[in-house]
Length: 223
Image (cartoon, rainbow, N blue to C red; front, side):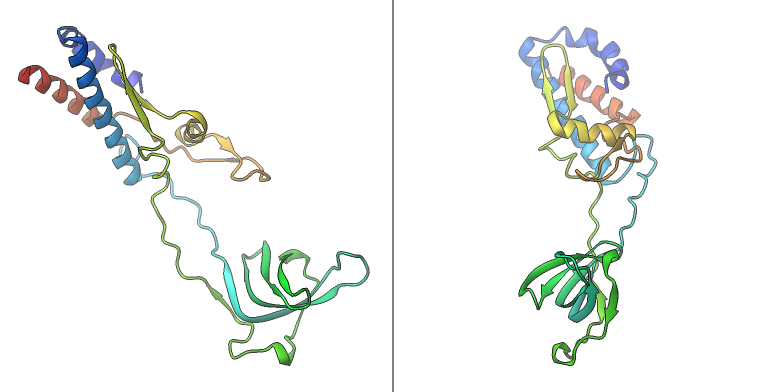
């Protein structure tokens, strides 16, 4: 954000030099906290520094559950023909894994949905009033994107006699950079890299600059 604050540094430089070292640090600390807070508020509002809305996240099809049972043929891990699987209380996401209680194995097992050889009727003894019907899970409450990353835990600030800074460090810095500049990254360890939309976590606005100048002038006037 250095470029965005050039105007403040130019206007305020002479005034700041009239303050003692302790006064400068106190003022810079106040300005840094104020600017960091404004960035968190903007991210929570899902807005870019220019006021445009963040590009919406891609909608993911929610998992589905079955309270009854499902039956299908699945390739045997030991070779040979497929075995019949009767699964109860299962959860699955279309096109991905199906997880539930494998009655024959007597344990929780997962099966690749696209490897299922054939769907079969559920044996009568394993049927229940709920049948093998599927239902979507309850709605997932969507939280504002990147809000946790922009929290005080990861978005830090610092000061010295010369100025102040706000930003990220370590792993948080790498993640923030992907979103800040719209780079490519892997959503998970084994996934392929995908492009992420540009969503600026850091970016001073005209209102930010005016507020920081107000803090400076107020400090000088009160001093």
